Image (tube, rainbow, N blue to C red; front, top):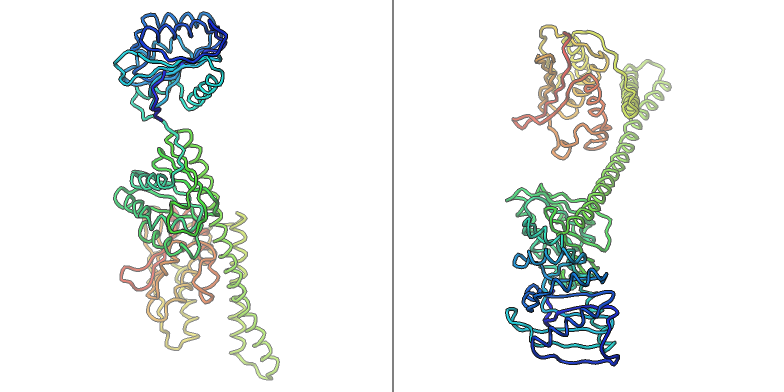
Length: 553
C-alpha cells in the first residue's frame, strides 16, 4: 500500500493546548515545524501515535533530542505507537526505537509522516527525503482530529509486528503477505502464474464442472500437464464430474498419469495451492458466460504458512472424504453386479435340476444323460455355495487352514486327471489339452483341500477362456518355496480387469462367473504365507497364473 501524501503522524491523547479554541494553521520553516511537534509531544498525557516513512524516521527531521523526548514520554507513562517501513537501510535505527517503544510495527509502501491526538494533529510534507521538513499542517479542530485518528487506526490494523519483519530481513525470508483481490482479471493472472510455477505439487479445488472446462480453455490445465511431464510434478484435483467435463477428465487421465482427479460434491469456493508455499482462494459463481474471470468473486492470495497449512488440511480432509465416497460407490456397483451374477449363476443350475427331474419322473426308463446333467448342476450349486461360505469366512477373519504334509506333484496329477476326464465326457475329440509332466516329489506343509481348491479354480478359469489349445501346469523349486504356474493359450486378461485381478466381485460379464474365485484363492495362498499373481503371456496369447507355497523342510 502506498500513500501519496507525505505526512508525519503523531497521535496524542488528552493534550493540553495553549488555547481552548479550535485552530488550524499552516506552518512554514523547519524551526516552527519542529517546535510545534515538540509542543504536541510534551502536551501528551495518555497516548501518542507516530507514523513515518523510512526516510522520515526523524533522523532527517534534525531532532538531536528525539530519543530523549520518547524516553521522557515513556517514563511519564504515555502509550506510544509507531508505524514505519522497516528496511535494510533503517534496520539499526528501528531496533533502537524498538528498545523504547513496545508497540512498534511495519507497513509496506509508506509515504510521508503525520500525527494526531484527541485534541490536535500535525502533518508534514516533503517532496525529497534528504531535505529537512519545511511545511506542516497543524489543527486542533475536533472533526479533523477524529478523521486523522481513524486513518491511523486503519493503518495500524493493516501493519504487522516489527519482530516478524526484522526476522524476514535478517534471515532472508520472503515476506508473508495476505492480499484481498477484488479484480477478477487480476485473479486470473494469479491463477495462471501459479499454475506455471509448480515445481513439486499442486492442489486444485473446483466447485463447478464447468470450471474445469474454462481452465482448460484458458490453458491453465495445459500448464499443469506440462509441469507433470517436464518436472514430474503431482497434481490433485477435486471437481464435480458429469457429462460436461467427463471427456476432459478422461483426457487428463490418459495423458497425465501424475494428475489425480476425484469427483467432488460442488460448492461455491475454489482454491489452488502450489508447492505448499502459495495459495489462491476465490468465490466461484455459476454464470452462463464464456469468460472464466466473470465467474470469480472476491479472492485471497497469500503465502502465509499458517493460512496455507490450514487450507491444505481442509483440502486433504475433503480429498480423503471424496476418495472414500468413490470407493464406496464402486463397492456398491460391484456388490450389485455380484448379486445379479450370483442370481444368474444359481438360477441356471436350479432350473436344470427341475427340468431333468421332471423328465426322469415322466419317463419309465432310466436315462443316464439326465442323471449326469443333474449331477453336473448339483456340483455347480455346491461350488457356488462353498465360495459364498468362504467369502463370508474371509470377511469375518474366520477362514481356517488345516495344514498337513503331502506330495504336491501327486495332488496336481490327481486334479489334472479329473479335468481330463471331464473334458473327454463332453468332447470325444477334446479341443483343449491339459498337460502336467510328472516330476520328482515335492512335499509341502499346507491345507490339502484348500490347495486343491486354488489349483482347480485357476484351471477352471483357464478352461473358460481357452476354446482350443493347451493348458499346462508346471512346478519350480526355489529357496524354501515351490512355484506352481498354470499357463493357457486362451483370450488373456482384459486390461481393464488387470489392476483389480484379485479383487472381489471383479468379472467381465455374467458368463465369467461370480468374480470371487481369485479373491478367495489369494486369501488362501496368503494364509499359507505364499504369494499369487497373474499376467498375460509375452507372446500375446493367453495368460499365466502362479502361486507359491513353502516347501516342507
